[in-house]
Length: 347
Image (cartoon, rainbow, N blue to C red):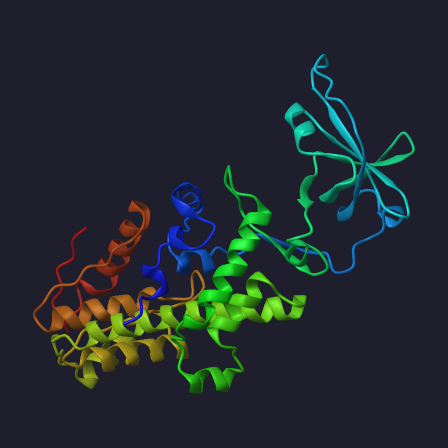
């Protein structure tokens, strides 16, 4: 019997090993299934990158080019500024980092680099301060350039390039083993893709529309499972043995008439609904929803009245002492002296 993806440790995937597995665990990716659900935090559209000369100041943008010049870190300044110049056929972009002098070991002239950050104009030149960057090599260019690229949450020792390569490897090896929980009939009715296709396109979408539909597919499954849990929870409660209250029509009519005002149609409907539920030999599950001051307490009082009329007790819980006191005074004033049901009220 083949293992489920939750039982396959990511450590045994080619290119991982024990050391990398510990780092991936910091991201919650312990199994292959965990890795698949490590979704990108954002995407960069590198299918059509903006030329340097067309970059707009004041906006966060993605740019790519070759490193033209690598400056020497200024160890004597307070900020220890480090700067490189990146260019393409249309122009140059100055990139500056602070208090990271070790970056001079990363950059070499001629390297291809992708940068993401806020573009600014300083001394008549375009610059990015502390941009995110990736060095692109020839062997993994297909995953990192010329397409919509996922940008993942990272931990120390894990780079975007490594995580994309690992994700691509796992998708090619294991995506076909993802099991669809949603029945085919429901997927067809709602036009949902398969789970394996959706997971693949969340990580490496061909378009923004494809990425959005893939995310919607996974979100649908989350709500689908949540609904099943709610239904099973409700089913487990309503199937329990409850107390069937005896509720005569005169009791309802006397309750309605006991107020110094006429109940609204919505209040009458709520009272009738509670009476119907409380007559059944199973627990009542009812949510009464309405605006503040619309008279929801009328229905709550009725439930208490029915319980006492059947020889049991009832309690109304309130979120504050003030509100509890108000309910107590209202209930006492309306029903304690009534002759149709003898009620003793306490706070």
